[in-house]
Image (cartoon, rainbow, N blue to C red; front, side, top):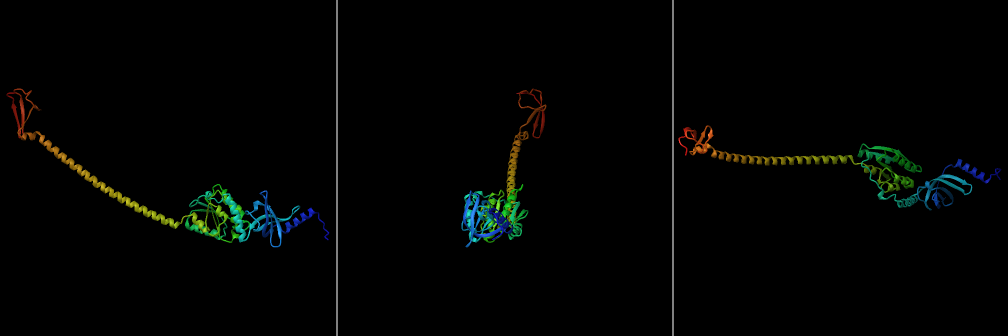
Length: 370
């Protein structure tokens, strides 16, 4: 028998100190059983395998989403012996593992969030095209980052890219992704669009983007979001909550920017069509001006002809009415001291008159007035 005798409380305290020193943090994989939530805050379940079972305790705030019995998960936490409730693992993190469990957990969370309206099309916003500033959330060492940057630079220029380097898989990934989203939303001058991306991988690799915390952060973003996770067949919950989803990182770059070469061809075609249209308009205007000039010339010539004919008629009329024409027919113009004598009234005997004929004039003295 041991020489050391503990009280119950001392034994609990010493054992916890020992576990804190020897096993401050443990990771355990097992199947959930007896899952329950108390007061919408406290989470209790047993983690078991074929031979053993361990009690687990935590809060709903560290769960990746809804859980249920039968799911295979990996937990992270600290072993603890409670004074009244016995041994358990105080949970720090829970993550579904295995293809089946991941899909089932994602389906449970998707159903829950869909009922809340997080995936509704009415919530979706349009993305700026092309954006001036992009907030990029991904790993700087990933192929996804390099693919996105390569396609973006080859298609369009002059876009400011601000990278927030995060882990895109593993236990630390969700918290880092959420921190990045919050960072871009807290800027005084927010970016135009927030791109969250990573390349393909297994269900375990992509699991961070189907956690409830990350999905809610994407849905709550004030900055329009474009999420591209994995390959085309992979669909994460973060993609469903985003304003737009891209099938791959390269496709995300394509969705945000026009193709420079294509746009140059379009501009060249527009220039050709505008030039051809302008030349056609100039030609049409020149033709119209020529026709107008010809019509105006015709009108002017016709008016001149009319005026000439009028002048000829007037001239002939004036000639016919002139005194000379009358004199040719035998008439004479009688004047006295420069005044034309039109009537015998007023003419006096002895008055000197000038009689103008066609070929000369005669000065006469009036002998008699009748």
